[in-house]
Image (cartoon, rainbow, N blue to C red; front, side):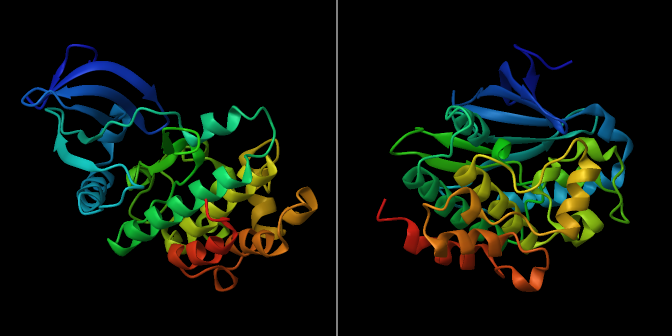
Length: 284
């Protein structure tokens, strides 16, 4: 059992548990040799039963070591526990998640300058990751930390590649669908077959996040994940302009294109999306 005071890989001393999600637990830890603060991400023990998934996780986690962006939390090391369970050591960022930051607006849209600042950063971070051959597959506000929330806010994406633990070799969910990510952010092609998730699936997820930040609501919602997935694969979302007629029409169009049901109608890359958003940043 890992807890405060535990030593991981003879290199990290666990200080406290930061959070627990569907895929794993995050601890704040100290690098024993240097005193540096890090975040340790350790998947839940139930994943030990799927050795092929663990191998894929190690492969993708190792790939994240090459990502260098001010908008992506840096992976510092990838290792294994004595049980064989892999873990990630990442830089520690002290700040709320984007989901927590949005909650501070009490159901109101995020101010446009702040939303645009964060969206441009997220698009740039995604683009850098994609160039390194890493696709997120589970991009959502809970997987973004915001350092210095406010005028100098900096968005930092994390949890790249962790979602591969949820799939077997055929791309089928190995766990209940409710344990994988958040249905509202999954692109139609990812809903139909998880193995089809690619660069444009991340673009879709960022489009949903933009819609949510600017409209204070999801484009699709429902009582169950199946209801949300059915709506996302069969219908177009209510145009953002209907909720926010005060926004520039061009910006609303960019967000809706990012969420297009068919990949051919969507932006081809995160960089294309960033370039389309840039004219609406207002110099912030």
